[in-house]
Image (cartoon, rainbow, N blue to C red):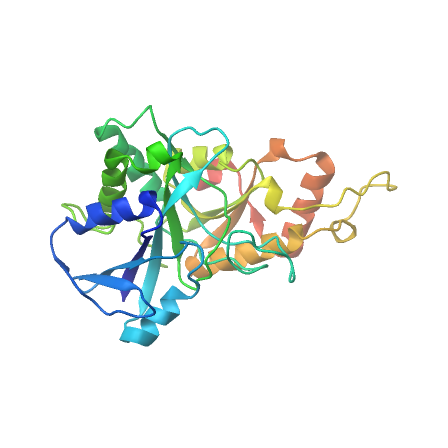
Amino acid sequence: MVTLVVATTLDPASINPAKALLTMPGWHHPGPLFDGIRSFINGDKLRLLEHDKSIIAEDDLDQRWENATGEIVDEIIFLSKHTAVSNLPALTIHPIGIPHLKEGDEAPQGGRPGWAAPPSPRMGQWLILLKKIAQSHNLIPEFEITLEATHHGPVTSKPTMFIEIGSTEDYWKREDAAQVIALLVWEGLGFGEEASIGNWSSKSERKKVLLGIGGGHYVPRHMDIILKDGAWVGHLLSGYSLPMEDPGQSKGKPRAEDIGGTWKQAIKVAFDATKAAFPGGEILAHLDQKSFKSWQKNAIIEFLGQQNIKVGKPADFH
């Protein structure tokens, strides 16, 4: 089984870390060429794919690689730029999907409405490793190291994460940031001096997995738990991915089934994808309580109960 690392020449925050990764030992070129995508081979398990399109436009790369080579894809890591209104420098990691959109909705950043890829089990431990490597390269405190909520495509069916450099062109081109991302991939996959990290096993002693619900795009309350306890982390649904129609002045406490919007779909899709990524794990929904109005929180908790999804407190992830 192989890991695909995917980069595009259109994006300096994507291709520069890929070039830095290719300076590491053991690479062979060329690998298989398919659909105009170039590939590089390192040992039995690592493959770097380089294409000339938008990073969010290449759907089903896992299946296309398997069809072209016969190799089974275990996971996918996309290298990309990050944009933010703040324009502040950042290194980010996030799962992908647009589970809150309904069929027929426009997907402005790739993906398929109502879909989420299995989240990479590596994300939580790689976030901690990213902070360590960034610190050693003097990128902290200039760069913020953070998770982002689940968003955008492309469509994949294997455990996936995006690793990004933000937030403006000056930062996208930074060679020191590119080197940090390359080292994260290299060391995180076990090609450095230490073993790979973030490998989920159904035999793991720590079986609890955080499914983040609510909060802003950078999910600070969920991330606090992950950084403190090294918790396993699945999908992270920010408030904008939980569209809920205000019941207004309805009599009594509104029931979950009476509140419209695609919030129930988003939770169910995110839960199922997280469960697929952590077979044998116990998926616990962690709510950013302060980000919800009381009627929203009550409805979400009711729906979670109906779906037999347990709600976890911070102490549950120790």
